[in-house]
Image (cartoon, rainbow, N blue to C red; front, side, top):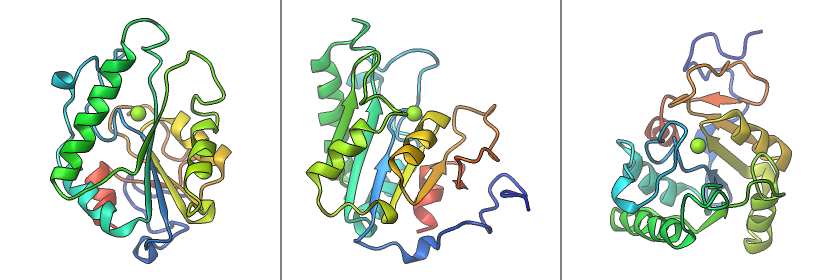
Length: 194
Ligand SMILES: [Mg+2]
């Protein structure tokens, strides 16, 4: 049986998204999910950060649905010396402020700024940090949303219930990849399915 008969046909999903409530956790990637990703480059400052359409509305829905919302983002531009940690932190402060202003929230942002590290996705380090920080996280009631197979591997390695793939930037990815459970065109489409 094909997992996806068409690109966004989630009829064979292993989860009823309507059952998601405050006992659930959302793990969410940043670039290519929340904001426009630069091709092979980093977002260096807040004035370069562009929310995708519908993202703030999506976070308003997530705020009502999920008990815990954590962002997990690889940002090795810092280790490469291309980007300053204080600029990354400033981007995140502004991003969270914008999301909160429009009725959403992110409980915590985990970043991996190293070249190679147990924290760097697809390794599980950032997820394990979140598990330590939020006792309410139950992996069997957790969803990972990302736009790369590395995000999907992170979800599998960590052991979340469901991996949601958004083919926003990686059109070449085979959406029948075994690490992908559900596919939505963008973040707001996923939020509206909850
Ligand atoms: Mg990404």
